[in-house]
Length: 317
Image 1 (cartoon, helix red, strand yellow):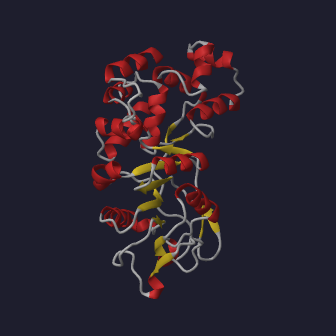
Image 2: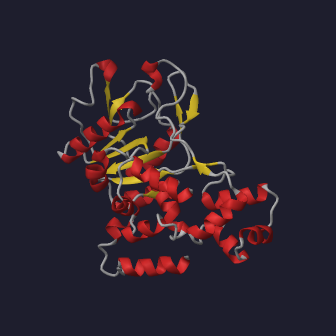
Image 3: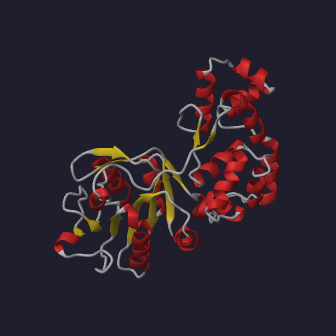
Protein backbone atom coordinates (compact mmCIF):
# COMPACT_ATOMS: atom_id res chain seq x y z
CA UNK A 1 0.00 0.00 0.00
CA UNK A 2 2.86 2.40 0.80
CA UNK A 3 4.47 1.97 -2.62
CA UNK A 4 1.12 2.27 -4.39
CA UNK A 5 0.39 5.52 -2.57
CA UNK A 6 3.83 6.83 -3.52
CA UNK A 7 3.17 6.05 -7.19
CA UNK A 8 -0.18 7.84 -6.97
CA UNK A 9 1.53 10.87 -5.41
CA UNK A 10 4.04 11.05 -8.25
CA UNK A 11 1.42 10.65 -10.96
CA UNK A 12 -0.93 13.17 -9.35
CA UNK A 13 1.52 15.98 -10.13
CA UNK A 14 2.34 14.66 -13.59
CA UNK A 15 5.90 13.65 -12.73
CA UNK A 16 7.64 10.84 -14.57
CA UNK A 17 9.94 8.30 -12.95
CA UNK A 18 12.89 9.93 -14.71
CA UNK A 19 11.94 13.39 -13.43
CA UNK A 20 11.68 12.10 -9.86
CA UNK A 21 15.05 10.37 -10.21
CA UNK A 22 16.63 13.58 -11.48
CA UNK A 23 15.12 15.55 -8.64
CA UNK A 24 16.74 13.39 -5.97
CA UNK A 25 19.96 12.77 -7.89
CA UNK A 26 19.51 9.05 -8.49
CA UNK A 27 19.50 6.76 -11.51
CA UNK A 28 15.98 6.20 -13.00
CA UNK A 29 16.44 2.46 -12.51
CA UNK A 30 16.30 2.96 -8.75
CA UNK A 31 12.86 4.58 -9.00
CA UNK A 32 11.62 1.80 -11.27
CA UNK A 33 12.81 -0.80 -8.77
CA UNK A 34 11.31 1.14 -5.89
CA UNK A 35 7.90 1.20 -7.55
CA UNK A 36 8.09 -2.56 -7.97
CA UNK A 37 8.58 -2.81 -4.23
CA UNK A 38 12.19 -3.99 -4.37
CA UNK A 39 14.20 -0.84 -3.71
CA UNK A 40 16.01 0.34 -0.61
CA UNK A 41 14.51 2.36 2.22
CA UNK A 42 17.08 5.10 1.50
CA UNK A 43 15.61 5.50 -1.99
CA UNK A 44 12.07 5.45 -0.58
CA UNK A 45 12.73 8.18 1.98
CA UNK A 46 14.43 10.38 -0.63
CA UNK A 47 11.41 10.00 -2.93
CA UNK A 48 9.01 10.73 -0.06
CA UNK A 49 10.86 13.95 0.74
CA UNK A 50 10.90 15.07 -2.90
CA UNK A 51 7.15 14.45 -3.24
CA UNK A 52 6.30 15.96 0.18
CA UNK A 53 4.84 12.53 0.99
CA UNK A 54 3.98 12.24 4.69
CA UNK A 55 2.45 9.44 6.72
CA UNK A 56 -0.34 9.37 9.27
CA UNK A 57 -1.35 6.43 11.44
CA UNK A 58 2.23 6.08 12.66
CA UNK A 59 3.99 7.41 15.76
CA UNK A 60 5.60 10.84 15.43
CA UNK A 61 9.30 11.16 14.69
CA UNK A 62 11.79 13.34 12.84
CA UNK A 63 12.01 10.80 10.00
CA UNK A 64 10.63 7.42 8.97
CA UNK A 65 13.28 5.51 10.92
CA UNK A 66 12.43 7.39 14.12
CA UNK A 67 8.71 6.84 13.48
CA UNK A 68 9.24 3.09 13.19
CA UNK A 69 11.12 2.90 16.47
CA UNK A 70 8.56 5.11 18.23
CA UNK A 71 5.73 2.94 16.89
CA UNK A 72 7.40 -0.20 18.24
CA UNK A 73 7.96 1.34 21.65
CA UNK A 74 4.40 2.67 21.75
CA UNK A 75 3.16 -0.90 21.41
CA UNK A 76 5.52 -2.07 24.15
CA UNK A 77 7.40 -4.38 21.80
CA UNK A 78 11.08 -5.29 21.87
CA UNK A 79 13.22 -5.80 18.79
CA UNK A 80 13.02 -9.54 19.43
CA UNK A 81 9.20 -9.39 19.59
CA UNK A 82 8.93 -7.47 16.34
CA UNK A 83 11.46 -9.64 14.54
CA UNK A 84 9.48 -12.76 15.42
CA UNK A 85 6.11 -11.30 14.37
CA UNK A 86 7.40 -9.79 11.12
CA UNK A 87 9.54 -12.84 10.32
CA UNK A 88 12.64 -10.67 10.07
CA UNK A 89 16.03 -10.97 11.70
CA UNK A 90 16.83 -8.75 14.66
CA UNK A 91 19.64 -7.22 12.61
CA UNK A 92 17.15 -6.24 9.90
CA UNK A 93 14.78 -4.62 12.41
CA UNK A 94 17.63 -2.59 13.89
CA UNK A 95 18.76 -1.59 10.39
CA UNK A 96 15.26 -0.40 9.47
CA UNK A 97 15.07 1.67 12.65
CA UNK A 98 18.30 3.34 11.54
CA UNK A 99 17.07 4.17 8.04
CA UNK A 100 18.54 1.15 6.25
CA UNK A 101 17.13 -2.06 4.86
CA UNK A 102 14.84 -2.81 1.94
CA UNK A 103 11.30 -1.74 1.11
CA UNK A 104 10.18 -5.38 1.25
CA UNK A 105 11.43 -5.66 4.84
CA UNK A 106 9.95 -2.28 5.69
CA UNK A 107 6.49 -3.38 4.61
CA UNK A 108 6.66 -6.44 6.85
CA UNK A 109 7.82 -4.34 9.79
CA UNK A 110 5.10 -1.72 9.28
CA UNK A 111 2.45 -4.44 9.19
CA UNK A 112 3.40 -5.15 12.81
CA UNK A 113 4.22 -1.74 14.31
CA UNK A 114 2.08 0.60 12.15
CA UNK A 115 -0.58 -1.43 10.32
CA UNK A 116 -2.82 1.62 9.79
CA UNK A 117 -0.11 3.86 8.35
CA UNK A 118 -1.20 5.68 5.21
CA UNK A 119 -0.46 8.81 3.27
CA UNK A 120 -1.43 12.02 5.01
CA UNK A 121 -3.78 14.24 3.02
CA UNK A 122 -2.18 17.17 1.23
CA UNK A 123 -2.07 20.19 3.48
CA UNK A 124 -3.66 23.51 2.62
CA UNK A 125 -1.55 26.31 1.18
CA UNK A 126 -2.72 28.87 3.76
CA UNK A 127 -3.18 28.95 7.49
CA UNK A 128 -4.61 30.86 10.37
CA UNK A 129 -7.69 32.93 10.90
CA UNK A 130 -8.36 36.44 9.73
CA UNK A 131 -9.66 38.30 6.72
CA UNK A 132 -8.75 37.15 3.25
CA UNK A 133 -6.97 40.46 2.67
CA UNK A 134 -4.45 39.92 5.48
CA UNK A 135 -4.12 36.14 5.39
CA UNK A 136 -1.17 36.51 3.01
CA UNK A 137 0.61 38.98 5.29
CA UNK A 138 3.04 36.78 7.20
CA UNK A 139 6.45 37.94 8.37
CA UNK A 140 9.64 35.89 8.29
CA UNK A 141 10.93 35.47 11.86
CA UNK A 142 14.07 37.45 12.77
CA UNK A 143 16.04 34.32 13.71
CA UNK A 144 15.43 32.88 10.24
CA UNK A 145 16.47 36.16 8.61
CA UNK A 146 19.66 36.12 10.67
CA UNK A 147 20.51 32.71 9.22
CA UNK A 148 19.87 34.02 5.70
CA UNK A 149 22.28 36.90 6.25
CA UNK A 150 24.88 34.64 7.88
CA UNK A 151 24.87 32.39 4.83
CA UNK A 152 24.22 34.72 1.90
CA UNK A 153 25.21 38.15 3.20
CA UNK A 154 23.28 41.38 3.87
CA UNK A 155 19.94 41.80 2.12
CA UNK A 156 19.93 44.63 -0.43
CA UNK A 157 16.34 44.33 -1.63
CA UNK A 158 12.95 43.22 -0.31
CA UNK A 159 10.76 43.42 -3.43
CA UNK A 160 7.53 42.45 -1.64
CA UNK A 161 8.13 44.48 1.49
CA UNK A 162 5.75 45.53 4.24
CA UNK A 163 6.16 48.38 6.71
CA UNK A 164 5.85 45.94 9.66
CA UNK A 165 8.24 43.36 8.24
CA UNK A 166 11.43 42.62 10.23
CA UNK A 167 13.44 42.35 6.99
CA UNK A 168 16.26 44.91 7.18
CA UNK A 169 16.95 45.55 3.51
CA UNK A 170 18.75 48.54 2.04
CA UNK A 171 15.76 48.99 -0.28
CA UNK A 172 12.18 47.89 0.20
CA UNK A 173 9.48 48.03 -2.46
CA UNK A 174 6.27 48.87 -0.57
CA UNK A 175 2.77 48.79 -2.02
CA UNK A 176 1.59 51.36 0.54
CA UNK A 177 4.17 53.78 -0.87
CA UNK A 178 3.17 53.19 -4.47
CA UNK A 179 5.83 50.60 -5.22
CA UNK A 180 5.20 47.34 -7.05
CA UNK A 181 7.69 44.48 -7.10
CA UNK A 182 6.12 43.19 -10.30
CA UNK A 183 6.70 46.50 -12.10
CA UNK A 184 9.68 48.22 -10.48
CA UNK A 185 13.13 46.99 -11.48
CA UNK A 186 14.99 45.07 -8.83
CA UNK A 187 18.52 46.00 -7.79
CA UNK A 188 21.39 45.07 -5.50
CA UNK A 189 23.56 42.08 -4.76
CA UNK A 190 20.97 40.01 -2.85
CA UNK A 191 17.18 40.08 -2.89
CA UNK A 192 15.20 38.21 -0.24
CA UNK A 193 11.69 37.22 -1.26
CA UNK A 194 9.06 36.00 1.21
CA UNK A 195 6.04 36.58 -1.03
CA UNK A 196 2.30 36.30 -0.46
CA UNK A 197 1.97 32.54 -0.73
CA UNK A 198 -1.22 32.79 -2.80
CA UNK A 199 0.94 34.29 -5.58
CA UNK A 200 3.99 32.14 -5.00
CA UNK A 201 4.49 31.06 -8.63
CA UNK A 202 4.08 34.58 -9.97
CA UNK A 203 6.74 35.88 -7.56
CA UNK A 204 9.12 33.04 -8.41
CA UNK A 205 8.79 33.85 -12.10
CA UNK A 206 9.44 37.54 -11.38
CA UNK A 207 12.50 36.66 -9.29
CA UNK A 208 13.84 34.46 -12.07
CA UNK A 209 13.22 37.19 -14.65
CA UNK A 210 15.00 39.91 -12.65
CA UNK A 211 17.93 37.63 -11.87
CA UNK A 212 18.20 36.40 -15.48
CA UNK A 213 18.38 39.94 -16.89
CA UNK A 214 21.07 40.92 -14.40
CA UNK A 215 19.11 43.45 -12.35
CA UNK A 216 19.96 41.60 -9.15
CA UNK A 217 22.99 39.46 -8.38
CA UNK A 218 21.27 36.69 -6.46
CA UNK A 219 17.83 35.93 -5.07
CA UNK A 220 16.74 33.82 -2.10
CA UNK A 221 13.02 32.98 -1.90
CA UNK A 222 11.17 31.38 1.02
CA UNK A 223 8.04 29.68 -0.31
CA UNK A 224 5.81 26.62 0.24
CA UNK A 225 7.31 23.36 -1.04
CA UNK A 226 4.94 23.08 -3.98
CA UNK A 227 6.65 21.62 -7.02
CA UNK A 228 3.80 20.54 -9.30
CA UNK A 229 3.88 23.49 -11.74
CA UNK A 230 5.34 22.69 -15.15
CA UNK A 231 7.45 25.86 -14.97
CA UNK A 232 9.11 24.56 -11.81
CA UNK A 233 10.24 21.41 -13.60
CA UNK A 234 11.21 23.00 -16.90
CA UNK A 235 12.90 26.18 -15.66
CA UNK A 236 13.33 26.62 -11.93
CA UNK A 237 14.66 23.14 -11.17
CA UNK A 238 17.34 23.74 -13.81
CA UNK A 239 18.41 27.28 -12.91
CA UNK A 240 17.84 27.37 -9.15
CA UNK A 241 19.18 25.51 -6.15
CA UNK A 242 16.35 24.16 -3.99
CA UNK A 243 16.67 23.53 -0.26
CA UNK A 244 13.87 21.63 1.50
CA UNK A 245 13.53 22.83 5.08
CA UNK A 246 13.09 20.32 7.88
CA UNK A 247 10.30 21.18 10.29
CA UNK A 248 8.02 24.20 10.12
CA UNK A 249 8.82 27.91 10.32
CA UNK A 250 6.90 30.10 12.76
CA UNK A 251 5.60 33.26 11.05
CA UNK A 252 4.00 36.31 12.65
CA UNK A 253 0.88 38.08 11.37
CA UNK A 254 0.02 41.79 11.43
CA UNK A 255 -1.51 41.36 14.90
CA UNK A 256 1.79 40.13 16.30
CA UNK A 257 0.55 36.56 16.75
CA UNK A 258 2.80 33.78 15.49
CA UNK A 259 1.99 30.34 14.15
CA UNK A 260 3.82 27.49 12.44
CA UNK A 261 3.01 26.88 8.80
CA UNK A 262 0.81 23.79 8.27
CA UNK A 263 2.86 22.92 5.19
CA UNK A 264 6.50 22.32 4.28
CA UNK A 265 8.71 25.14 2.99
CA UNK A 266 11.62 25.36 0.60
CA UNK A 267 14.34 27.90 -0.06
CA UNK A 268 14.81 28.75 -3.74
CA UNK A 269 18.25 30.22 -4.45
CA UNK A 270 19.27 31.86 -7.73
CA UNK A 271 22.85 32.93 -8.39
CA UNK A 272 24.30 31.84 -5.05
CA UNK A 273 27.77 30.34 -4.67
CA UNK A 274 28.73 26.87 -3.42
CA UNK A 275 30.28 28.48 -0.35
CA UNK A 276 27.07 30.33 0.48
CA UNK A 277 25.00 27.18 0.11
CA UNK A 278 27.44 25.28 2.30
CA UNK A 279 27.09 27.96 4.98
CA UNK A 280 23.31 27.68 4.73
CA UNK A 281 23.50 23.91 5.23
CA UNK A 282 25.53 24.57 8.37
CA UNK A 283 22.91 26.86 9.95
CA UNK A 284 19.63 25.35 8.68
CA UNK A 285 18.08 21.89 8.99
CA UNK A 286 17.10 20.25 5.72
CA UNK A 287 18.80 19.29 2.45
CA UNK A 288 19.61 20.65 -0.99
CA UNK A 289 17.59 18.98 -3.72
CA UNK A 290 20.54 18.12 -5.94
CA UNK A 291 23.75 18.79 -3.99
CA UNK A 292 25.88 16.71 -6.35
CA UNK A 293 25.19 18.94 -9.35
CA UNK A 294 28.43 20.90 -8.96
CA UNK A 295 30.46 18.21 -7.24
CA UNK A 296 30.15 16.07 -10.34
CA UNK A 297 32.51 18.46 -12.17
CA UNK A 298 35.41 17.77 -9.80
CA UNK A 299 38.06 15.71 -11.65
CA UNK A 300 38.92 13.52 -8.67
CA UNK A 301 35.31 12.56 -7.94
CA UNK A 302 34.49 8.95 -8.92
CA UNK A 303 31.63 8.44 -11.35
CA UNK A 304 29.16 5.65 -10.60
CA UNK A 305 26.99 4.53 -13.50
CA UNK A 306 23.40 3.32 -13.31
CA UNK A 307 24.31 -0.37 -13.38
CA UNK A 308 26.70 0.05 -10.48
CA UNK A 309 24.06 1.89 -8.48
CA UNK A 310 21.60 -0.90 -9.21
CA UNK A 311 24.05 -3.51 -7.94
CA UNK A 312 24.61 -1.51 -4.75
CA UNK A 313 20.86 -1.06 -4.35
CA UNK A 314 20.22 -4.76 -4.88
CA UNK A 315 22.75 -5.64 -2.22
CA UNK A 316 20.66 -3.72 0.30
CA UNK A 317 17.50 -5.69 -0.45
